[in-house]
Image 1 (cartoon, rainbow, N blue to C red):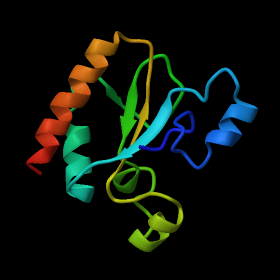
Image 2 (cartoon, one colour):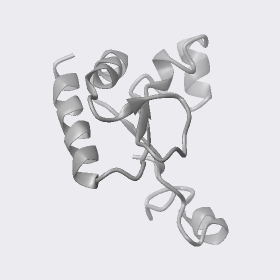
Image 3 (tube, helix red, strand yellow):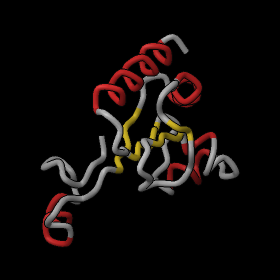
Amino acid sequence: MNFPSLPSSPYHALAQRYLPKGSGAIMTFGIRGGRAAGEKFIASVEFLSHLANVGDAKTLVIHPASTTHRQLTEEEQLRAGVGPDMIRLSVGIEDIDDILWDLGQALEQARGA
């Protein structure tokens, strides 16, 4: 998982310095199964919204390799930091149990991709 507020992030010190109240609610994570699993995950979300914008009041998810960066070759995507397994999540203000439920069920469905 990539999230600058985590001590394991290479950007943690910068986040602490420049974002002392927190680094926000946008993070990325990889999903086992690469591109096919990423696409299946996005197709499986029921509660979360599949949109490219970030920082909304509602929780948004996207698979950049098959959407916002699909015009690039796989090599160009990797150079841009977009792996075939990457999911971007922008957490909104909904109840955390609803968000976690949808993430969990979509991950379960993507597991079979």
